[in-house]
Image 1 (tube, rainbow, N blue to C red):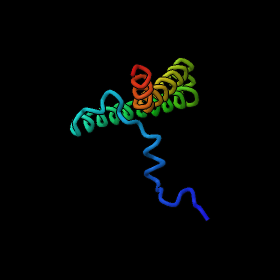
Image 2: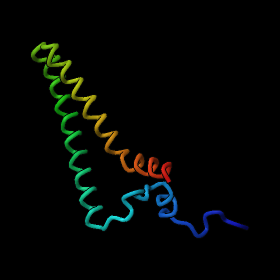
Image 3: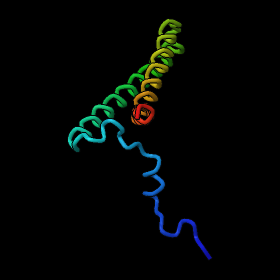
Image 4: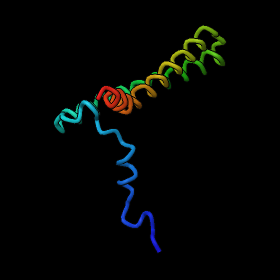
Length: 102
């Protein structure tokens, strides 16, 4: 009997879909950590904007009956979540664009 995944492990699967840093592959470990920290801070900032927008929409729509504040909240939610999506997919986008250029 032959088992297909006999010698594989989870790192084989995860390593296959993880980006290989594309053009940034030659950077040192410190530079990679700095890029990851900057991206993490940007993600947290985008999450904070989305949470602030949700609070602004909720307070404006119910407590104050302020439709302008509620609309601003919706815009902040969309902006924050769009930023999270873009920043979260930057590694994949860089790898795809670099792969197409090579």
